[in-house]
Image 1 (tube, rainbow, N blue to C red):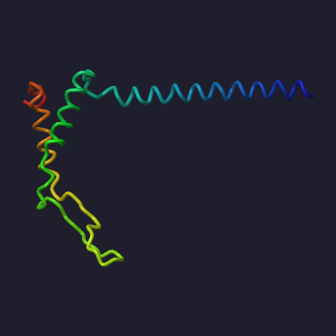
Image 2 (cartoon, rainbow, N blue to C red; image 1 turned 30 degrees about the horizontal axis):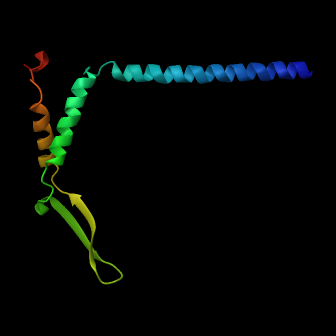
Image 3 (cartoon, helix red, strand yellow; image 1 turned 90 degrees about the vertical axis):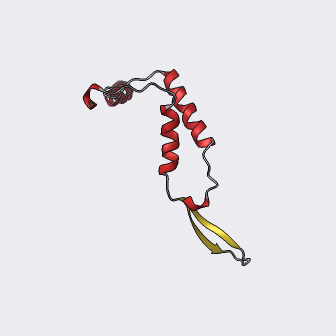
Length: 114
């Protein structure tokens, strides 16, 4: 009886290991399926894009107070504090990023867009 139990436990352990392995393989294949229709870029190109985004954000003028919505409140000491600050118009920031990225590349029209 104990041999039978040990055999079943070993079989269950083996099947659990196989399920774990198959789940990992399934996740890899799902990732591949998600990526199959994505355009391919090199790591070097991605580095150029990353640097362009960093440069655009670092050099963006965040000091223009007209771009923000501010919610003020009073704290317990009677001091006025900015409770919430939100960037109202993200278009200018997005445009600065896109323009800086576009400066890094020669952009050709797609055949489907002509």
